[in-house]
Length: 455
Image (cartoon, rainbow, N blue to C red; front, top):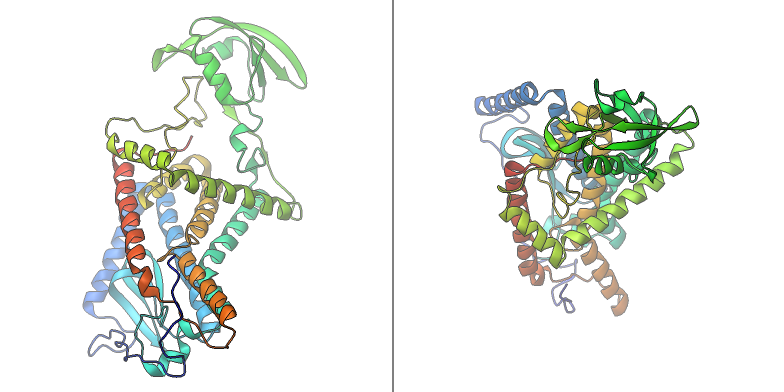
């Protein structure tokens, strides 16, 4: 960030501000009541939700409501902290676009808008170039003490982190987790979950609950290891090492061929991973540990994406989207030992809201509510961290400005309030917005043309 020089403008005692424009009001409309046009807009939203539920099921509706509530709580965090700090908030709306309904309470207008894609709160005087009524200057964001500005700026991400902690705790204690860990659940100890009729596995006498320990003496850590070994041996005889009731035995069996691809070996089993529930007290440190693990993965993922190789790989995915098959799930209960999917198919890729929605619906249909809880925990951690990127217009940009201003006040030691010249950051802010726009459009294109799925 370009370091602003000492602010030559007047101190808070003499604010040179023009009156801000009044909050939009509908002429002749009683406060809190709706016009015919607004009723029509509300009907459109309700109809869209009905169509959504009919086409995607209850999990589609839960995904939309969950995302809207999550973003609304983010903005509510900013709003509550701002009001506690004595800042003036002129608007708090759920949704964007044309207004459906609103009511004024005190100096704040609350309401609904047509597009249910989140929420927003308007706090006056967020930076030095915003013009406000001189009478409102003492209640602006920019004139409050450092810790109050800092608290408002981080409130949104804090809400996401609190939500994530609550979701992870509910998952570990209430639902249980396959493998007992979020980040290494795919490497957890697995067992035979299903056996296909008339398959090599059925011929070998495999049963649900068995552990396939090795093939031809090669130890198998994960179900994916099994898939890879079997895939290369169609109609070959192998020796399976199977553990049952604590005892291991070896059985020779001839593998079949995959019904969908005769060149791929077929054993005929699906996997299951035992679900482990934690106690109420035991779940507390485990929640913190899992939160840290997911946060670390999120930071690493963002770091890998915004590197020359990550951006190059993402650009290639966008360019070749129509030519590359979408990655498919390998967790279906009836899955057999087929060829392994390309594990790099979805690396260096950010999902659009459409992609998140699709994955959420798929996760709900295959794993139920527990899968949605896990997904929303990931989403909250990622969004909370992403919002702390130290650039405007992210919340992290306001955090950095607040810290910079505090450092300048410490250096000056004259007790005067320091205002950073945010105008110098406008070009960089425009550049960030432009990059975000490109990511939004390209990720939406990818999710339309080549939808991503989780393994």
